[in-house]
Length: 125
Image 1 (cartoon, rainbow, N blue to C red):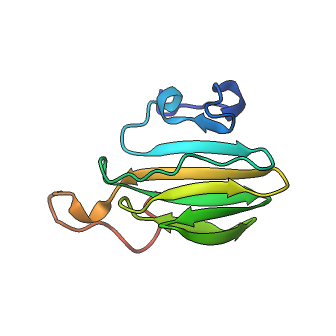
Image 2 (tube, helix red, strand yellow):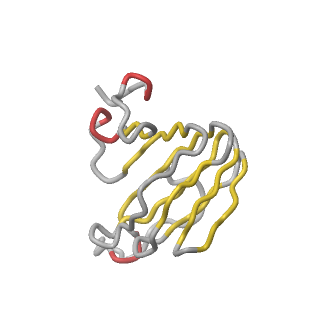
């Protein structure tokens, strides 16, 4: 089979919001999480310095605040936020439910691939 499919609602929820999809999708280089955040929900403050994973948080529903290195960043539906591995991050949800898609992967600047460069123009995915 050349693909894998999973519905996030079929994946056990962790921390009352997070659906980690990487294991059921058997991904090798990218982490994918759906976070359905109840009103007032907050994630653990954390970073990814140990595994050198950068993250992109895409808010697909509602409004929320993401605190990056103690800097609160207001998010609304459609906003995407890039966070480097060494920065701390925490989702702080407001008064309404919100939903994020969180994507993480190793930073591309440090890989020793053959050409030393990644395709940065056009659609590569």
